[in-house]
Length: 289
Image (cartoon, rainbow, N blue to C red; front, side):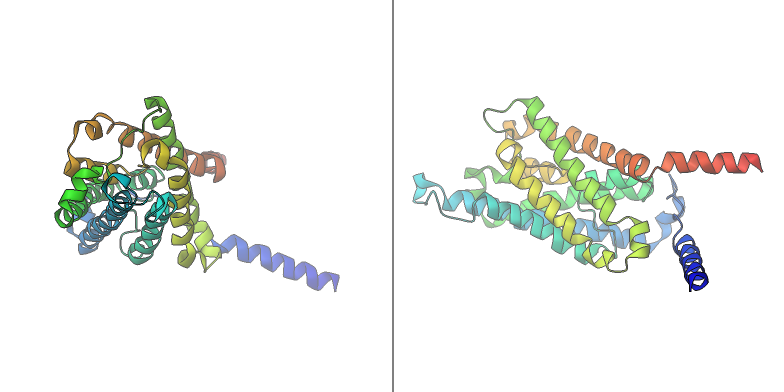
């Protein structure tokens, strides 16, 4: 029996050793992508997903503001509340990531794209096209919301991200950095190819923790910045609302998310997955040969 157990254990080790190998990193610049329909299909998917994301979430914010506005016949306890707004953002991300993950990866956020680029999951060409599509989609989504509810859109701020009264710019920047770190760290962990290779159910469940991360971050940071953690979301709302306050604080919603995404990518790749140490070990092994 002991011998049989030893054989089973050895076979298990061999299985796990062959079970997974890190895929090669995405090329920094892949010119061949530019002639592939799959790239443009993915870019279109990112555009449409971001458009739908902004349309639904901005209308949720405006609807809540209208229903709770006591100066215009609203009820202070009416509407979906901050909890409902957080659910709208998190729920839409869950739905849209689930729908587009197999086409574009379901980024819907330039900070997520930037983090995945730093983790060498996407090429520079794809990352740039995704970011452009996401920003254009956000502008169009906010434009639709404004077209359908122009009066309320102007009155209640158009869902634009702005630093709230009583908070310093440093606090707002810190909130955006930490919030985006949580989101991008969750994305990298939930879509880790090593985990996907060994747990077949993970690709199906990946949108769920990502949506929950967005939901939880909104609960924490809506009172501070209105919650950006997505430069396209902040940019699209600022373009359509186009008021000075929204543009004054706009830099917070770009600098913060990109810093948070970079920290998350470094932490996941070089600390949790020890990519630098693995590369050094591989170099030493090849040198010894």
